[in-house]
Image 1 (cartoon, rainbow over the protein chains, first blue to last red):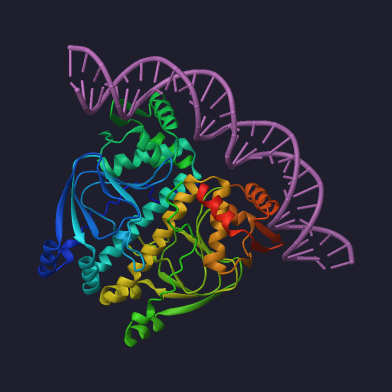
Image 2: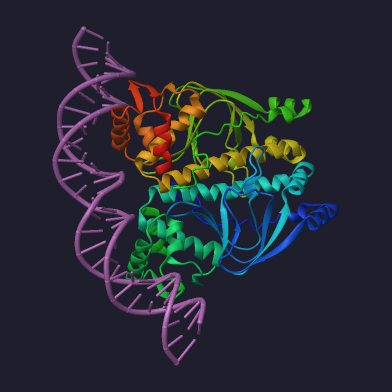
Length: 230
Length: 230
DNA sequence: ATAAAAAACTGAGGTAGATCAGAAAAAAAA
DNA sequence: TTTTTTTTCTGATCTACCTCAGTTTTTTAT
C-alpha cells in the first residue's frame, strides 16, 4: 500500500503558534484589526466561494473544514482550537474562501483583517516563514488523506480516521465523538451506511468499543494494520 | 456536484516567478549554491521519503509529481517548466520529500540548497510572501483534484484531466500526449482499462479525437458538462 | 412527559468499476 | 528487417460498495 509514512490525519496540529513571532507593535496591530466572534454548535463560520475578508484563528472549539458537494461534502479537516483557518485564501488573484467551515461545538473565532495579515507577512519574514511551515504541514497531511481516500478501501479509510481523531484531536484512546456518522462518511468519502457497518464490524472484532457517542480504540495494532493494508 | 468552481487542474502554473524579488546579492547566493542537473526521459528526480536537501526549480521539461503506492501510484500533479518543486518539504521537523518526481521528457532541474533557500525566506519577506502565494495556489488546485477524485465518477474525472492538460499544460485543444494510459490512470485514480474504455467512448461520441498520441478536444462544451455532472 | 424529528441501524438488491486473461498494435531492440 | 517488449485495446466475470426502503434508537422540541 505504501505512502503510509504520510500523515493521514485530518487536522492541522501545529502546536507551534505564530503570533509570538510578532513585535509588540504588530501584536497591537492584530488586536486592533480583529474581532472575536462566537458561534453556537452547528453554525457556519464561513462559506466556500464567499469573499475572504478575514483570516480566522480558532480560539476555542472544534470545527470541520469542508468542500461543498452535491449531494455529499468532502471534509478536508477536523480542526481543534489554536489553529489558523482560511490561510489558503492568501493568494493574489483570489479573494474567496476555498472551503466552508462549520462548528461541532461552541466556538470562538478571532477574525483578523486579511489586509493587515498580508501586511504582517510582507513586513515580518520570520512570521511569514512560520506561516510557510504551517501551510506545508497542512499540505503534508492533506496529501496523506488524499492517498487514503483514493487508494484505500473502506476499512482502511475508517481506520485512518479513527486513529487520527484519537491521536490528533482528542489525544486519547477513548473519546466522545461530537461527529455524526454522516460526517464520518464525508470524512472518509463513503456512504453513511458503510460507516455504520464497518464500525459495527470493528466492534464485533474487538478492535473498538462504542457506547453511544463514546468511542474507545481497543486494539491499536490491528487498527494500524488495517490502515496499512488499505 | 458543486465544488466545480475549484480548479481541478493537475499542474502548478504560477507564471509568476519568485526569483525577481531577490536582491542581486541574493541571486548570486542562489547561483553559487545551486547546480543544474539534466535528466533523460523516464528518470527519477527525487524519491519520496529520501532526504530533502534541495528545493528544485524545473527549468526545462515535463515531470510528474506523485505519491508512491502499491500497486498504484497517485499522481499529484503534472508539472511543466518554470515551476518550483519540493517546496512542501519546507517545514521544520520534516526533512524528507513528501513525494517522488520523475520525468516525461528530457528535463533540466536547478537544485537549490535547502538551507540557503530557507535563509532567503527568513531574510526577504517579499520573497517568502510570494512563496506563500505559490503554495496556496498549488493547494487550491490540489483541493480541486481531491474533490474530483473522491466525488466524481470515471467520466467526470477523465474529463477533468483532459481539460486541465489542454488548458494548463499544453495550452491548446490539440496536443501530443507524452503520458501513457497507465499514467492517466494514476492521475485519475482508476484502472488503466477504464481510461482506455472512456477515451474510446469520448472518441465514439465525437467529444475528442485520438490519433496515436495526438489528442484533440473537439467538443469543449460537452466535456465541461461531463466534468460538472461528475 | 410526550410528541416530533433526527440520527443510527439493518437487510436486500443493484451497479459502477476493478480484475483477469488474452489479442492487437506500437515501440524498442537486435 | 525481424524479434522482443511494451503499450493499447477488448470482452467476460466478479465484487466492493452504494442505493433504497424500512425499523429502531436517540435527541430535540413542545
